[in-house]
Image 1 (cartoon, rainbow, N blue to C red):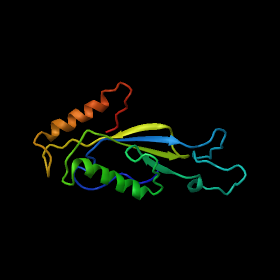
Image 2 (image 1 turned 180 degrees about the vertical axis):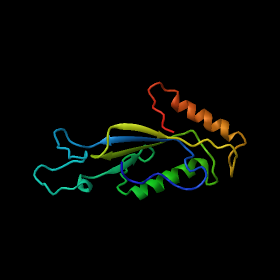
Image 3 (image 1 turned 45 degrees about the vertical axis):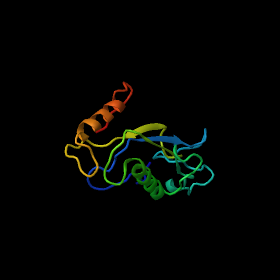
Image 4 (image 1 turned 90 degrees about the vertical axis):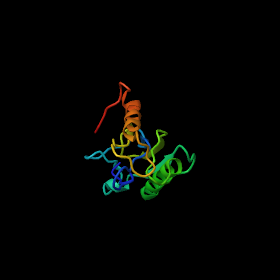
Length: 148
């Protein structure tokens, strides 16, 4: 995507799976530049940052488009806290986000919580086991490619 929109911080930041679907909005026959970016054949001065609109949509907010990637980050945090609380709780209920852009490949990624051994805040004593089960649920798909 080339944009920073995932929440950042210390400790466990990803507390729900984030299913991120990248949707390429390039129209068929549109020219692609040397580095993969769209180029308007009638405008040689077109630049990679001016390839067209990019936006995000959340499954839990149908019809609402987020054109600011800062707002996308804020909505991920808001939706995570809505279900898990503000004190580091976790949930295996995913957040579904689609990013529409002419600069992406059609691909679905899942951001999962990292394994933690010591519970903090509202996390249960068996936090490690719960996260391992959540991870196994997603990576057991034989078509999954695991990046760690």
